[in-house]
Image (cartoon, rainbow, N blue to C red; front, side, top):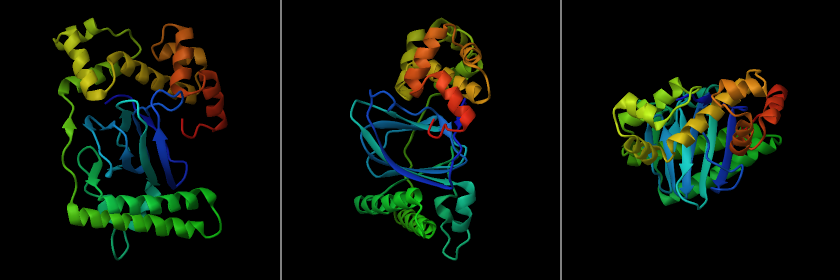
Length: 290
């Protein structure tokens, strides 16, 4: 599996709706990442591929993904229209109370497949109810007025009851597109040789396929060119190095960039801030969302 950043949850509960507009700087696709808690990803509109591990899904409105802790995942827009989703994150220590009630809601968290995901489709009525409660949860999480901690538990319970009833009535969606082994092998090769120069000729010699076939297959199942994927992984590595204390020059050359100017430009365009600013924010502990 490719290098994948751990995005620790800063609070026991996070809840927000988000609309992403492709092509707008700072509003791009999120790289592969994983959390120390569960993510509830409700897809509301647009056209995307949703990746979990080495599988990819093309969701429609109302599909809910429950991603287990430490499961790598990401979403990529397909097209130029905005895509919308509602995301709830629950840290591991927060879910224990929902696992031991007399009316157990553990089904929402247990029984995920080998990739660490549950997937179901909510009815139109359930989507409306879910979003209505989630908006109230979001306000309670972020306003933090007196009594909001009790409301947070109440709203989470309401959402989990809705999900449990949907699982009881309709079961989980099964269909998914498994990524070919070749794509997984190419990802692993890139991970192992990330700080080296990688060409299609190198991949052809390694996997005994025509470079054009490798490139088109990779693009078909990831919505990324091989070049874009390599850049994405190098930026991910550079971010980790900067958080761990490397200076900008070290992060540049130790993540596989040969040209310092290109590194600065690519990092700033992808992350939304320069590597120098990212390093300063890392030292100040102010990197939430990055």
